[in-house]
Length: 336
Length: 105
Image 1: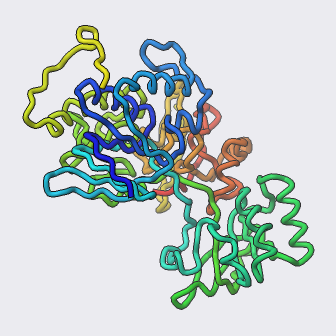
Image 2: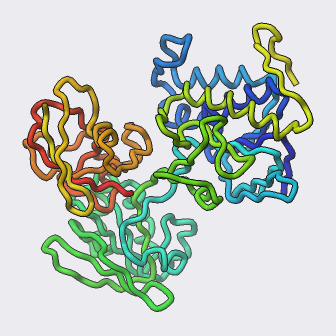
């Protein structure tokens, strides 16, 4: 297990998380960033790298990826360190007020301050509205196929109409004893080849394909046993099932951060606009993930929030030092 | 004014008045009029938390665009009349339409 010690642990390496490194660096605070994505830049790199952004001051237009590259160059003097492709799981506050942030890969970051710059949050599987669904998670219900062999000789029900639903239906047809695919529509928008293959398998009787239907309920005794579905004529039928795999894509959620005792409103973290601190002393939230009266989800607002956060965080990182505000035009940028 | 009706998840209907010259999406109007939608991704057709159902309106509004369908097709509770409010620009011919809020809370 790796232990990293730093001044500020920043969760999220999007534009606002990256710029926070600069503002912290000016005040001689070191940063470590964690991001669930394998690269820096957050939404900008992952979703719209080639889209122009028009509201970055001083840049009439700049491509999203260019902005990320520029930010990386800007923070280079402050030698930030990164844990990419890792999701934060736990936050623990020690007796001296410092924090241990732990990632999904077991990396631990010991820091005096934690800054959540998580943007949209992390993408998690979208769950269908079935009352007792969570009761059967790990007991027959899973939202992704980790080990296809686990389904050998079993009765598997898949639900969904996207590529992953099609692909896993085709793949599991050769492994499972029985495969049923339930889809709310009567056509598939996934790859046409995969859709054709699924219709073919259904014709051959190798899978059960139930269209224009959805799952109403699931039952079992400690483990999933039955899936109840409502068909096109509103008739209910029951399918015996050992496993249910709902594949409805991903949706952005706060994730484990929601369990850290922070005040949350509409999936966003509530902050004090004086310094963008949360209700937990030492934990700040900046950028799209926070909420306050008048909040605007703009990159430039996140930059401002990062600057004020850094001034406040300084008092926690260097409690014995006096903070004097300095302009970069007067003092320049002093690298670490 | 463009008058539309919004039905919440409990089935309560509420009228919403929108100035003709407004250049906003239905999602932005819903947020501005304090309707309970998350709209997490801010209008990029990524999260589907602004999922609405067209209850009444002219034929053209029942058809989702490709960007919407990519996402709507993955939703467990989407129907043929489902749209993403963030992809619906407010237009004068929306007058009299009824939308039902479906997105997760």
